[in-house]
Image (tube, rainbow, N blue to C red; front, side, top):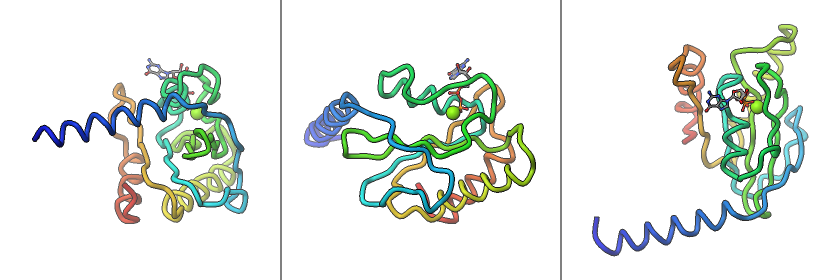
Length: 154
Ligand SMILES: Nc1nc2c(ncn2[C@@H]2O[C@H](COP(=O)(O)OP(=O)(O)O)[C@@H](O)[C@H]2O)c(=O)[nH]1
Ligand SMILES: [Mg+2]
């Protein structure tokens, strides 16, 4: 890496750190696609099996303990929870897939909502797919990765 690259990299890092220090607030919970906010801002989303630590990671990233609700009971988040980072970026806490203590048709509905969102959301720039290191990559993770790959979602 040349010195110029290093300087650019440092600048990018600095900007990133500054951005993540800005206020991040809860915006809304989305239970169906028609409730999605306008796609006029860059959006990043956290996906993964229930209980993998999506909400905990979001709280850690923004230095707030109770921004995203965490729970030791899997399958609690059933909606897409939107957080607004300084009016600049939408951060989305997705419902966990692969585990749900709910009737089958309800689970199917969430699955459809998440899949349609992941594949079709125009302003979605990155999906962070969390894997529980204690359990490794499961079949459902592979299915989601495959779906993201086919939809060209980074
Ligand atoms: N051991 C361990 N537990 C974690 C970690 N992150 C989250 N947890 C715990 O795992 C449970 C589920 O976390 P949560 O963030 O609600 O998972 P989510 O369902 O993916 O949003 C909670 O009891 C957390 O305290 C981690 O990195 N290590
Ligand atoms: Mg959660």
